[in-house]
Image (tube, rainbow, N blue to C red; front, side, top):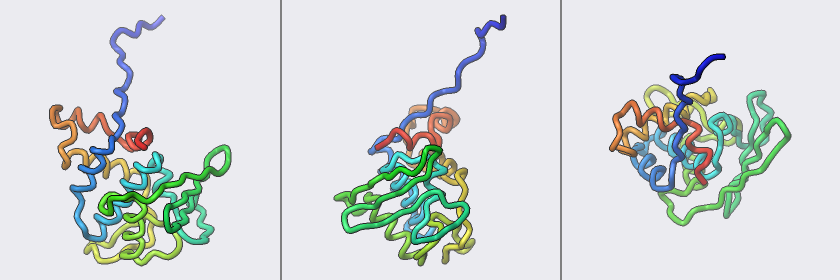
Length: 177
């Protein structure tokens, strides 16, 4: 028998609360990269999405092999159709009343300024930040984005930086809505 006296379970990731997400998106610029990252955080938070679900979203009728999610934007909501192991499920995100933090509005802004009509939604931005590229982001980008905006926003500033980084991850969006 192995005694488990010195083995501690990994720390549970903290959920990102509404006030936290507001502080996190406030750290982002209003350039193309900032618009993309704002839309990613707000859509992920509003839908309680996995980081892989966020980056796999497509708009339009594409048949991309990396596509496992579709977005349809309506006047009052966005409907995300997500592929899972058991089939497809729909997640509805209604428009918010605050234009600065509405996930649907943030997504529309990103799509308009990035000039994306079809294909992957969350893609890389050119080095000079002036145009969206066609390369889909991977899920690690979401994890890095969460950690960097948590630090910049001062969430849980009572803890040392290393402990703050350990508390939040891509999983932090899952229990949020």
